[in-house]
Structures are given as structure tokens and as C-alpha cells.
Amino acid sequence: MALPHIDLLYSASGLFVGFLVGLTGVGGGSLMTPILVLLFNIHPATAVGTDLLYAAATKATGTLVHGVKGSIDWQVTLRLAAGSVPAATVTLILLHRYGMESQRGGHLISVVLGVALLITAIALVFRPQLTAFAASRTRGTGQGGTLALTMLTGAVLGVLVSLTSVGAGAIGVTVLLLLYPMLPTRRIVGSDIAHAVPLTLLAGAGHWLLGSVNWSLLASLLVGSIPGIMIGSYLSSRAPDKLLRNLLAATLTLVGVKLVMA
Image 1 (cartoon, rainbow, N blue to C red):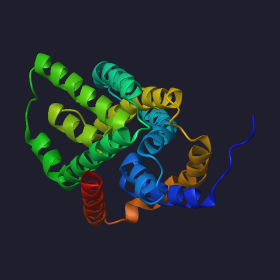
Image 2: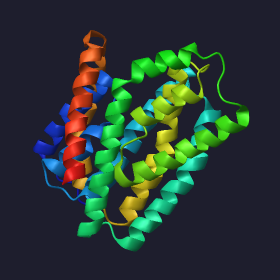
Image 3: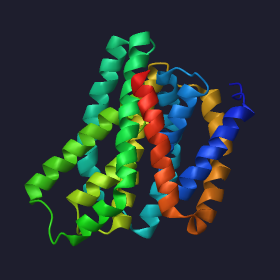
Image 4: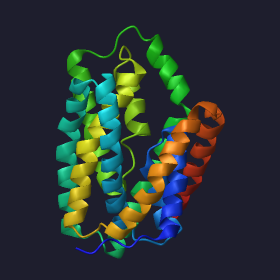
């Protein structure tokens, strides 16, 4: 099999996004998918499908690190997956039935992507307040209610991620902070990353079977993003968190509005 062609312009975009992900921890889909759609005019379905497999590879590495550190609550991860895997499967079946490559399919993905970016921006802006609110609660919802809400959260993420590749990071962590106030933040983050692996792998495989994955694009992005994430992670302790978070939120808001209004 021939090696995929590496496009250095895509690699430069991967470097930029990887650097920001390393600095802020914001999921690459929130940044990469809009860049591919708006700047490179790649069809939304191809952008989403390619980014999902990219996310599966990077999230698997993060899961390994969190697993070694013991910062994953597998019960929470399984609860999320119980909702997200069936929801993602149904979403992929519907995408196949109604066609993703059509103009209507591309428009639907763009609109949902825009809405997901706006929700992500809100989650970024109010993350500190929500974290403080969760920490002030002495107990969470009852066991039955927490289980149902966690599975519902997983189902919503399954639909969003399958359609847009966005949602498994900032949105998932924000909701889990409210559902599990007694769980340390590092375990919430680790559990969310672990849950993203089967979800993005399933959704990415579905897009691959539907023909919406560009392997040369995927390879080009990884060539740039891997060193970008390493550099950003190294410099993250020196970065002004509040300023970066608000700048990212403003950027995602502008992009989200543009996609919704397109």
C-alpha cells in the first residue's frame, strides 16, 4: 500500500492546533474541524471523519497515561459509554441512510458543529464557576438519578461527536463536574478521556466505512500535531489560563456563529 502524501500546509495547521491543545487541554475537534471546513473548504463529513480517527489515536495515549496514574473512574466511563455507543451507532446509521456527502448533509453537519462550538465556548467561560459550585455541594444526585443522567449525557455526546467530532472534551467534563461533585477533577478528566476512546473510534470507523476519511489528511495532521502537543504541554504551566480560555471561547463563538448562519 502506498504511503499517504504529506501536505505541509495541513501539518502546519496540525502544529498550531496541537500547540493550543497542549496549552489549554481543549479538544482538537473544537479547533481542527472548523479550520478544515472554513479555511481549507473540506467537506464537513470528511473533516469530521478524519478528525475522529485523529482524536481516537491521541485520546488512547492520554488514557494510557491516566490509567497508569490511576486517575480513571471506570464506572463513570462505562456509564457514559452505555449511552454514547448506542447513540453514535444510530446516528451513523441515519447519516448513511440520508447521505452525508450531499449538500443537505453537509449543511446539517455545519449547523450542528456551530451549535456544539457555542456550547463548548460557554463551558469554557463558566468552567471555574461550575467547578466551584460542584466543590461546594456536599452530595450529588441520588444513585439512580446520577446513573440515568450520566447515560443521557453519554447519549448526547454520542450524537454530537458522531456529527461534529466536538463535545467529548469540554462539554463532557463540565457536565461530569456537576454530576459527580465528590469526584476529584483529575479523575473526572481521566474518565472523560477514557470514554472518548471507544466513542471516537466507533464514530471514526463508521465514517471510514461511509467513505468520509481522508488518510493523507490524517497523516499530515498527525505529523504536525504530535510535536505541537508536546511543545504546548511543556509550556502550559507558564501560560495565562484565564486569558487563553477566554480567547479560545471568543474564537469558538465567532466560528460557531459563522457555521450556524452559513
